[in-house]
Length: 390
Image (tube, rainbow, N blue to C red; front, side):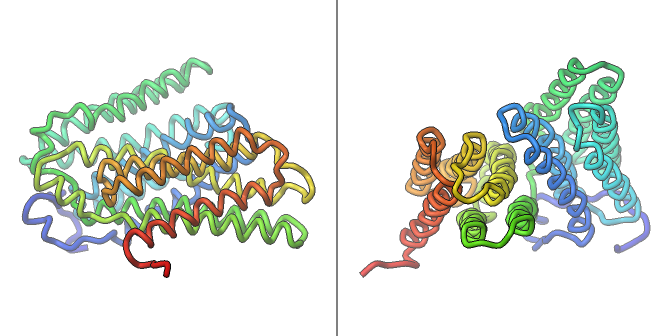
């Protein structure tokens, strides 16, 4: 911390892009509350593996993810690491902790608390944006627009507290729509010169991806810990780990800041928007994958895997691969039509498995999913020339 109190400063632009930036200790500490929040919302899905359960899981996951996104993009552009920013971020952490506490029954008795916690976190972010608008003339237009849009969304969430369910959730949806639309509808002229830092942003997104992958690993450990050790449960655990490890490999082997640097040089704000919104189905799929593996380990040996659990695992991994295929196709991560086709094709195979895999054992289903995920790693290595077959 360079001084006790200083105004926000612009961290992007041509000069700042030459600066090597990494996540700060404060950002890493901030991420800890999201570890808890993701774990809690995943627990909801574990308790209700159904279409309704998955939709509820996604509906609650989105505000958690968007709260992280808001702070990440603000810090990417304006982080000053002064005492004011630290204290405001600490208040946001308390709001996210409250969000995690209320997520267990977030669409029921705790929905009012969930809404208040989300609105409080957004209110702090709005304050930070208006603070940036006051001190950084170059960023005043964009910061004011973001602050205004996010303030409207926060007010909608706060009003929802006084509306009975299920009408309350309509205001939630409207608030999320305003939140999502605010960056999308901002004029390109406001973004130019204020594009996110091309090194800091991929690292931050990578860290959140690690958080949800960590939830998948925890699910494997919890699943095994709750069962009596036998060959089947141990094999399912190993295969579940292979799935998580393969998804980690094909994401982090292909991600870099090169696409963002090129987009920044060409003023292509669309690439940043695809980067932002294209990661949402990926992190939802990764979180759901861990829950699916945990259910598979919990299924007794000799029994066929139930249809909801089969759809959960196959659908979650397919969602991850579809998202990665989109990111490949648009060049947000390593631009490659071949890898994109492999991701899309494998996602289609997993959907087919979910449809026709009636009667398959848990070991059979997780084994097939692990195999097709591992083939993605092999294909990437072969295509890049790191693996040859003689």
